[in-house]
Structure formats: structure tokens, C-alpha cells
Amino acid sequence: MVGKKDIIEKVKEALDKRKQRKFSESIDLSIALKGLDLKNETIEHVVVLPHERGTPIRICGLVDKAMQTAAKENFDNVIMKDEFPKWANNLKKIRKLAEEYDYFVAQADIMGEIAKTFGRIFGPRNKMPNPKASCVVPPNADLKMLKSQLIKTVVLKTRKTPVINLKIGTDKQGAEIISDNINYLLEQFIPQLPNKEQNIKQVVIKTTMGPSIKIM
Image 1: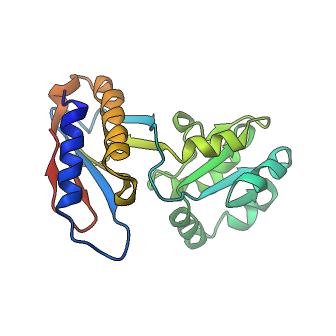
Image 2: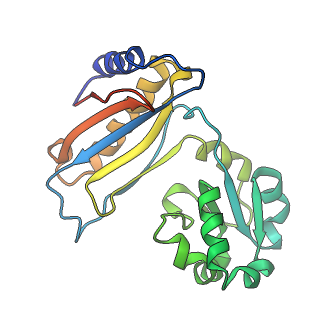
């Protein structure tokens, strides 16, 4: 597998080749896979990176009274269980909700009601509360700690095509932090593939407006 030193050099190359702009650019990572039957197997792996990715995330809590106070203190929005009927048949409103938030955190004992109300829209958009990302929690969960974890969390998941695209940082963070994130992600993700590195076709990075740089 590619070493951290090589990754740093590739990140520096991507940063050097970008045009200077007045706004911060994202550093995007693209992992192309091969040798997988996506009709019969789905790749999904959650990684908590060593560093944040440089931009804030938005979290919405779907909870009952037991978590109301903690959720409102830590999340950007909270939808209470007794409000679900207002959402049930408003698919347009749910679509807009799905677009506005990066993560939805669910109180575990009302997951049935959440799935019934929001699942039709959230499911295809990969926005259902994900237990693998610790987004389905008991009423006594530490939501402050969860929020700090989600800021560094990425979900690598295949859909219809064998390519996973995600944001790994911003140009303002510098090559060292970005390369730490990439190196750790690859160390955690590749061993989970059925045939390990043999399932990797290529890995590339790029800034928002810059050229693609091949890492492996």
C-alpha cells in the first residue's frame, strides 16, 4: 500500500497545482474500485478520521422528550416525535430536510416511527440514521461527544457505480493534516475490502477547481 511520505508529496502536488483563489477549496478524494459485484454486495465502512475535514457539519436530531434538552444543546435542529405526523405525507418538505443536514441522529427506541415517517426519502439518499456511524443512540447518550466524533466521520459506501467520492479536507489545513486523514482512511478501509488492495483500481485527489492527482 502507498506510504504516508508518498501521500504527502501527492497532496503537496495537488495544492501547488491549484490556482490561487479568494475562497477556500475542498480537497476531494476519489476511490475507484474493481472486482466487485455491486448487485450482490455493498461496501459500507465508517471511518473516524484523526482530524476534522475543515468545514462545519449540520446535524438534525430525531428524538422524544427524553433527549429533547441534550439534542437542542448540541444539534442544529431537532424534530420531536410528536411532530412526526406533520411530516408524514409532506415528501417535498422531507426532501428539503434531507438536503439541509449531513447527519440525522435518532433516539433508538423510536427508530420504527422514524423509518415510517422519513425512510422513503432518507433511504435512497443515504440519510437514514446510521448505526455504524453511531447515529442511533440510547436516551442517555453523550451527544456532545457524538457531535465531536461526527465532525471527523466519513462513510465510504458504494452505490450503483464502483466509485466512492468524499471530501477529506480543505486547502487551508495544509498537506500534513490532509495526508494524515488520507493515510488513516486508506489504512482502515482497504483491509475491509474482500480482496484488500486488489479491489483498488485507483485513488486520486484534487482541489475543487484543480487537476486530479493519482495517489495509487
